[in-house]
Length: 289
Image 1 (cartoon, rainbow, N blue to C red):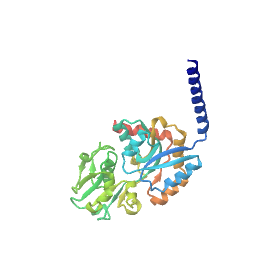
Image 2: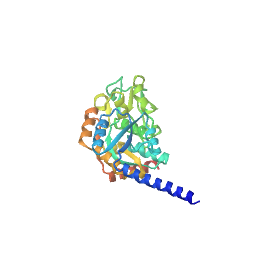
Image 3: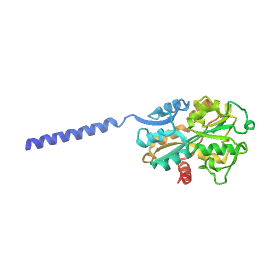
Image 4: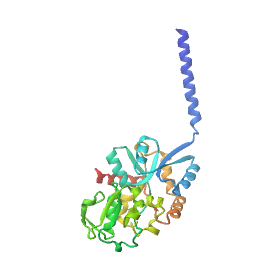
């Protein structure tokens, strides 16, 4: 019995020593932050990786091909942050999924644009023309609002940022509104008269609003706040200093220069504080409750 007790105490001591040794060896361990994005070819990400390295953080860019998986991966703990979506899209996802995710900072405003292979001005639209718009809960009302701003159609007074095609009150050209997955909108340009394409997806297709769109959102408008892009994290990590450092690095001049160069001035960094971002999120949630 004494022999067994001695063996047990020896084993316990070994475990404690190993644990102590492990803590000492991880004090200077490399910090790794995995961030999910929709398309990793953005010029800002190599800049971000280098800036993070100077802060002792290894920033790993994880590319996703759609608008749903980055949030699911974040909620599952497969990544630490994501940066690909508007505050409106994010708020809708959180409301519908119940996932405990929060925005911890703003990134860019990326104007939604109207593109066409057939016309050069919305004045050239003809009766019965086909119009492709993204079908997700954030982009669809955004697209219809843009068409109203352009004078193409009219929406009901209660349309807000959650309305859909049933809220169209006037469509004088009897345009055929075709909703589809956002990633499909550039691909149908040969088959429709105009397509409203999210900025990031347009960039992947080789398009930019300032060069190729026949109409696009005005970043100075008071109505664009729902479409400011954000970085999101799990709520439990909202105050994590490494994650907040990544937000801070995104707001640097080096990153802004890279974005301006790549997108030819058609994306704009938005530098809201953590408190302002949280308030924006709180306001957005009211639309989806």
